Each structure stands twice: as C-alpha cells, then as structure tokens.
Amino acid sequence: MADDPNRSSPTPPQSKRSPWSLLGALLVLAPVAVSVVLYHTDDFHPAPIPADYFAAVAPVPERNDRILAISDRLGEGLLPGPEDLAYDEASGFLYTGCYDGWIRRVNLREEEAKVEDWAFVGGRPLGVVFAPGGDLVVAEADKGLMRVKPDGTMTMLTNEAEGVKFRLTDGVDVAIDGSIYFTDASYKYNFSEHMLDVLEGRPHGRLMSFDPSSNQTAVLARDLYFANGVSVAPDQRSVIFCETMLRRCRKYHIQGEKKGTVVDFIRDLPGLADNIRYDGQGHYWIGLSAGKTLEWDVLMKYPLLRKVLVIVEKFIKVPLAVRDSGVLKVDLEGRPLALYSDRGLALVTGGIQIGKHLYYGSLDKAYISRILI
Ligand SMILES: *[C@@H]1O[C@H](CO)[C@@H](O)[C@H](O)[C@H]1NC(C)=O
Ligand SMILES: *[C@@H]1O[C@H](CO)[C@@H](O)[C@H](O)[C@H]1NC(C)=O
Image (tube, rainbow, N blue to C red; front, side):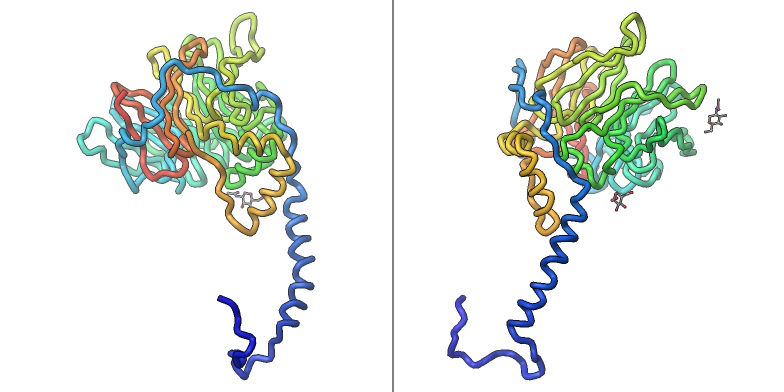
C-alpha cells in the first residue's frame, strides 16, 4: 500500500524521530554490521571441492524412490533426531541417540513399540554401537567417545588425538577384539556448525582407533572430507568409513599385508554418505543425508557462492536443497544393490535391516521410520 503524501502525519506528537535520523542510524550501523559479518566469516574459507564430488551417480539395480508413502513411524514425538541405530538382538531393543542428549530405546518385540529413556549422556549423541561385552559405545559429538555400561554407568574414553581435540565425534564401530574405530568429522567446526564444515569444503576429518587395553588413541587416516559413518568388516580385516562430501566410503585395512593402507570401497554414491552399518547378513546399509542435486552441484562448484550463502544465512534462514535422502544397500564388495529414498526426505542419517523391515533414522524427525522390504 502506497503512502498518501497529502495525509496528515500519523506520527505521535511525543516522537521527535525524523526519517533522517533513521538514515543516520543506518549509516552508522551498516559499517558495524558489515564488519561484524566479515569478522564472523573471517575464518570461513570455502575451497574448491575435489572432483570426486562431481562424478556421475553409479547405477543401482533396484530402487524405490517413494518410500515415504510406505513408511511407519515408531515412537513419534518421543525420539527427537534419532541419528544412529544399534540393535540388541537378545532383548529386542533398538537404541538411538537423540537431539536432547538422551539415548533412548524402543522394544521392537512389543506390538506398540514403547519408547524408554535409557541413559542421559548430554550433548549430542551420534554414533551408537554395542561392544562385545554388552556396553554401548557412543560417539558424543560435543564431548568425545564414551562408554555406557548396561547399568547406565558412563566413562569418557577419549577426546583428542595427536594433541588435536575432536569437535564433532561422529561415527563408531567396535571390532570383535574390542578395538574401537571412530571418526571425528571435523576438528574445526562442532555439531551445531556442521553445515559450515560441509560448505567450506575442506578436509577436517579423521578416522581413529581407541584401544581399551592401553587407552591409546591412534589416527589412522586424516584430511577426510567430513568423516562420518564407520563399520568394521565382518571378516575383521578392514574398516569402512564414509566421507560425506565426496559421496564415497573407503576401506582401511587393519590386518594382513595391506595393513594401514586405504582403498576405495564405494564411490559415486547417489548422495552424501552418512552412517554405514553391517546387517550380519552380507550387506552394508549406507544413509544418504541428501541426494546429489543440481543445487548442491552449483554450490559445490562455486566456493564464492558458498561464502555469500554463509553471510546471507546470518540474516535470513536460507533453505538448502536437501532432498532425495534415503538408505542404500550394498554388498560386501561395495556393489550397490538397492536404494530406498524419497524426494520429500531430508537428512536420513542411517538405516539397518532387522527381520523383514528396514529401520531408518534422521536428524530432523522425531521418530524412527520403518518400511517392509
Ligand atoms: C559450537 O561452536 C560455537 C562457535 O565456536 C559455540 O558458540 C558453541 O557454544 C559450540 N557448541 C558447543 C555445544 O560446544
Ligand atoms: C584406562 O582408563 C581407565 C579409566 O578410564 C582406567 O581404569 C584404566 O586403568 C586405564 N588403563 C590403562 C592401561 O591405563
């Protein structure tokens, strides 16, 4: 609605403010705002992303890209941001780390899948996995690697390696001999800033091991592009780990003559790789937190655009093109078998097959989803 210039001033008599003082305030405040912005993004230096990101998507023989319509919800409203899933076959409980610092569990053997608060670890629990003795090992994003005993007692295991603190402890798995393999997605940005790490496009991630018999933490691979999910191969000879931004998972040999070397396990994924879990039946399940979309391609191609996006984000929330998220089933050789996804899905962090169902978690939903496969 345009202002009528002939209308009498609606300004209340007590106000002496003129348009000029507003302009004056803007002239003073604008440089301050700009310098604040520059100061806060001073440390954000987006880089060209390696060519691996841009590779064409490898074909997947079987696909269902409409899984939302067939998904059930477990524990709706009671499981905020269930990131990773750990199943205890003996009890039938499915465990997950939630946004509010709780590890919760759902009894899959009950008709109505009741949710229980199990252990409060604080911070943001991401990776959760059972160790051979029955303890739950937790990658708590903010504090580091933790162990929770069945009675709820907690111990901090490690929070730094080679003098560099973890800032985003993320994926974890435990070998049969008790060795723990885990990732720190970034030594630069913490969980609440993880999008900055993704957009910066620089390798701040590490794959590490923790030996419970000596309490030693060792760095196995460094300079990783958002180091995420970890899964020990069933033959115990290697560890698979995902690098979200490069749409790939690699294999680190922990035994044999190739010990200490890294090779590709699977590349050219249909999206950004998150958690990876072995299902005990010859398959890995890889969460794809976002599909490879045109919007992401453009952002990844132009670092300057990412810088502008981060500056603009300080003032208005820019919705990022996160969709076509899902779970990919692959065989032991890293060959894709089946993709379960949906255009309307975002931030699926991981999934696993239990019986006839695929269960999957997500950062932005308050429930675990399940489909019959
Ligand atoms: C994450 O980092 C930001 C910026 O350094 C800080 O303000 C925030 O408190 C950190 N969050 C946690 C949980 O440590
Ligand atoms: C490892 O740390 C635990 C406490 O976290 C301690 O009880 C144990 O003695 C330590 N082991 C070694 C070999 O230092």
